[in-house]
Length: 561
Image (cartoon, rainbow, N blue to C red; front, top):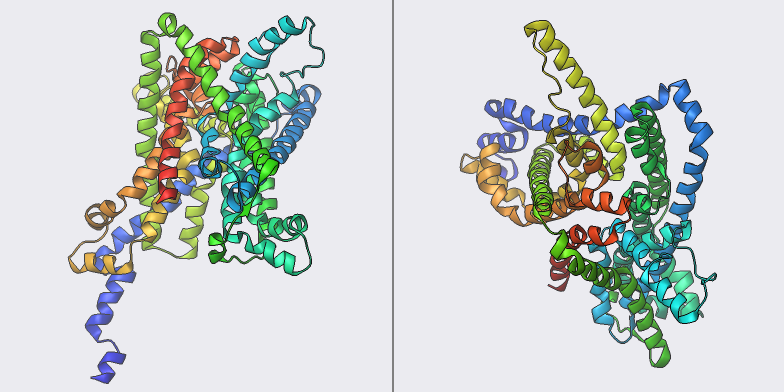
């Protein structure tokens, strides 16, 4: 008996082999599942490869025109914008994270979650609200001129590089705040107590111990801010501040030069991947340890003017980043609702909802298949394919729009020529000008958003559940549908909510690949802000803000449990 216990019988070995290595009857199905991550990775790499290939086969006149006219200014503008937004977001995000995680001051519990609310407002919405309020003809400067009786030469110019940076910092600082606050919560007050035991005061302990220990989280948040800054199109378009994303759009739709747009997109890809490599190298050199119990340590009380000063700082960030834009949008929307709201806005809303629903179903379905395939095949090659399939989120929407459009245009031309040669039929454009192009671009960009929560939910399903399903004769599609899918409902719902809101707010992909006449809320905002019609842009903006609040509500509820 002991030998039988130590050495599995032939039947037991066969059962394990059937489960982990798949039996002969399911070998073909197993091969099909293994192919899914590679097919998705190939689909993601296709637009990237298309854009990057243009960098190695440049057209001489295109490069000459870019170098003589726009390239230098684009590089300078992008550099200062990225540096300013990253620095400002890190400064505000780290400061607020420290105060809400480690210190005690009036309103701390409220600010700990309320400071995330600016994530609900797209940066381009904050941008046109800032211009509408603080521009020369806006109500703020108009009221000050009437009160002071002068032209306000000291008032800063909102339509400037500094204005763009301030708006983006207000929109993106929550990325740094969220990640860094989690880091400080694991340290708590005890890190400062350890520093004081070494003869350091609290200020020295913060800069020499607490801050260095939080560097991985700070770097991660700042990297997200940089990715969002490089990918942003709506904010810089509102300010008429030329960066690579606006230059790609102008090259395509103003100059009608797709090669020029592809060249600019290839340069932006090089910049993005260079930043990713630098960030990975930075993370690999950092070693740190966390003490989970320290999150329960007592907080540092800030009494008197110090506590109220911190509360004022947090209130100011929340006011300018969320409350002021929401209040001004509500005023504008109420003012123009009676005369501006018509059947068109119902069409904009319907197009946005329908497009978001299609993209959500497609992206979640693909992510579910990829996650399940990776569960069945956990070899390094398959894991590498899964990682490649989720890199699209790091790419700006304008780059993906160009990268998806070029191969689809080539495929359309091939199909048209084939139909003419074989059947003598003029098919016209079969794929271009349809929702297919948009959905492929959305899936490529937001697959990472859906993959993370679904994969996390899948990790919670133990191997014993798979063994039980196999014992009941369920495997492959049957096991996924009847066993895994009911358990994954929570993760799928979270993923669907995130990608639904992201697609509603996405501007460059929608603007550059939409079918003729297929206008959405974000497209309407772009059209109205391009003409300086801030009040008209408020109606669709309010709908986007409400949609953006949904994932934040879910997140806050999860953190409170």
